[in-house]
Image 1 (tube, one colour):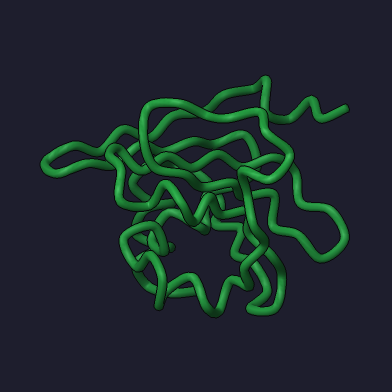
Image 2 (cartoon, one colour):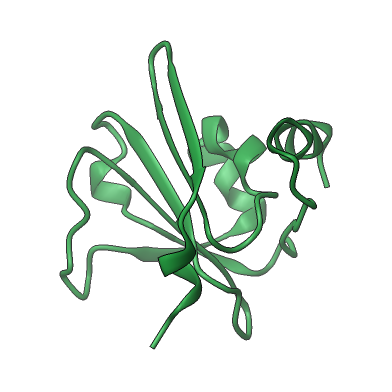
Length: 112
Protein backbone atom coordinates (compact mmCIF):
# COMPACT_ATOMS: atom_id res chain seq x y z
CA UNK A 1 0.00 0.00 0.00
CA UNK A 2 1.30 3.42 -0.83
CA UNK A 3 0.98 6.32 1.55
CA UNK A 4 -1.11 8.18 -0.99
CA UNK A 5 -3.60 5.28 -1.21
CA UNK A 6 -3.92 5.13 2.57
CA UNK A 7 -4.45 8.91 2.68
CA UNK A 8 -7.27 8.78 0.10
CA UNK A 9 -8.97 5.92 1.96
CA UNK A 10 -8.61 7.76 5.28
CA UNK A 11 -10.14 10.88 3.74
CA UNK A 12 -13.24 8.92 2.71
CA UNK A 13 -13.40 6.78 5.85
CA UNK A 14 -12.93 3.39 4.19
CA UNK A 15 -10.56 0.50 4.73
CA UNK A 16 -7.77 0.45 2.18
CA UNK A 17 -7.96 -2.51 -0.23
CA UNK A 18 -4.77 -2.47 -2.25
CA UNK A 19 -4.12 -4.76 -5.19
CA UNK A 20 -1.30 -7.17 -5.87
CA UNK A 21 1.30 -5.74 -8.30
CA UNK A 22 0.71 -8.50 -10.88
CA UNK A 23 -3.08 -8.31 -10.75
CA UNK A 24 -4.80 -6.60 -13.65
CA UNK A 25 -6.69 -3.36 -14.15
CA UNK A 26 -8.93 -2.78 -17.19
CA UNK A 27 -7.57 0.35 -18.86
CA UNK A 28 -9.04 2.08 -21.93
CA UNK A 29 -5.67 3.06 -23.39
CA UNK A 30 -7.12 4.89 -26.41
CA UNK A 31 -9.05 7.32 -24.17
CA UNK A 32 -6.36 8.46 -21.73
CA UNK A 33 -5.87 11.82 -23.45
CA UNK A 34 -9.53 12.68 -22.76
CA UNK A 35 -10.91 14.35 -19.64
CA UNK A 36 -12.17 13.57 -17.11
CA UNK A 37 -10.38 10.41 -15.98
CA UNK A 38 -12.86 7.91 -14.56
CA UNK A 39 -12.44 4.79 -12.47
CA UNK A 40 -14.80 2.28 -10.96
CA UNK A 41 -14.16 -0.85 -8.93
CA UNK A 42 -16.17 -4.06 -9.07
CA UNK A 43 -15.35 -6.84 -6.60
CA UNK A 44 -11.93 -8.35 -7.40
CA UNK A 45 -11.91 -11.82 -8.98
CA UNK A 46 -9.06 -14.25 -9.71
CA UNK A 47 -6.11 -12.14 -10.89
CA UNK A 48 -8.07 -8.93 -11.52
CA UNK A 49 -8.43 -5.94 -9.22
CA UNK A 50 -11.98 -5.03 -10.25
CA UNK A 51 -10.75 -1.60 -11.43
CA UNK A 52 -11.78 -0.20 -14.82
CA UNK A 53 -10.30 3.15 -15.83
CA UNK A 54 -11.02 5.35 -18.87
CA UNK A 55 -10.84 8.93 -20.06
CA UNK A 56 -13.71 11.04 -21.32
CA UNK A 57 -17.36 11.36 -20.41
CA UNK A 58 -18.54 8.10 -22.01
CA UNK A 59 -18.06 4.53 -20.86
CA UNK A 60 -18.16 2.28 -23.92
CA UNK A 61 -19.77 -1.16 -23.91
CA UNK A 62 -17.49 -2.37 -26.70
CA UNK A 63 -15.76 -5.67 -25.92
CA UNK A 64 -12.35 -4.22 -26.80
CA UNK A 65 -12.70 -0.89 -24.93
CA UNK A 66 -10.51 -2.02 -22.01
CA UNK A 67 -7.10 -3.65 -22.19
CA UNK A 68 -5.52 -5.45 -19.22
CA UNK A 69 -2.51 -3.87 -17.52
CA UNK A 70 -0.71 -4.98 -14.38
CA UNK A 71 -1.06 -2.73 -11.33
CA UNK A 72 2.71 -2.30 -11.13
CA UNK A 73 2.76 -0.74 -14.65
CA UNK A 74 -0.15 1.63 -14.08
CA UNK A 75 2.04 4.15 -12.27
CA UNK A 76 4.12 4.54 -15.43
CA UNK A 77 1.11 4.94 -17.71
CA UNK A 78 -1.31 6.92 -15.52
CA UNK A 79 0.21 8.01 -12.19
CA UNK A 80 -2.69 10.34 -11.33
CA UNK A 81 -5.00 7.42 -10.56
CA UNK A 82 -2.64 5.40 -8.34
CA UNK A 83 -3.67 7.14 -5.09
CA UNK A 84 -7.28 5.99 -5.66
CA UNK A 85 -6.51 2.30 -6.23
CA UNK A 86 -6.82 1.45 -2.53
CA UNK A 87 -10.53 2.30 -2.51
CA UNK A 88 -12.60 -0.85 -2.00
CA UNK A 89 -15.09 -2.41 -4.40
CA UNK A 90 -18.11 -0.21 -5.01
CA UNK A 91 -16.15 3.04 -5.21
CA UNK A 92 -15.71 5.38 -8.16
CA UNK A 93 -13.62 8.43 -8.93
CA UNK A 94 -13.55 11.18 -11.52
CA UNK A 95 -10.53 13.44 -11.97
CA UNK A 96 -9.83 16.49 -14.12
CA UNK A 97 -7.80 19.67 -13.74
CA UNK A 98 -8.97 21.23 -10.47
CA UNK A 99 -11.66 18.56 -10.02
CA UNK A 100 -11.90 15.44 -7.84
CA UNK A 101 -15.09 13.51 -7.23
CA UNK A 102 -15.07 10.24 -5.25
CA UNK A 103 -18.22 8.33 -4.32
CA UNK A 104 -19.67 4.96 -3.41
CA UNK A 105 -21.93 3.22 -5.95
CA UNK A 106 -23.58 0.07 -4.52
CA UNK A 107 -24.60 -1.06 -8.03
CA UNK A 108 -20.93 -1.87 -8.71
CA UNK A 109 -21.09 -4.68 -6.15
CA UNK A 110 -23.72 -6.58 -8.16
CA UNK A 111 -21.71 -8.13 -10.98
CA UNK A 112 -23.48 -10.72 -13.10
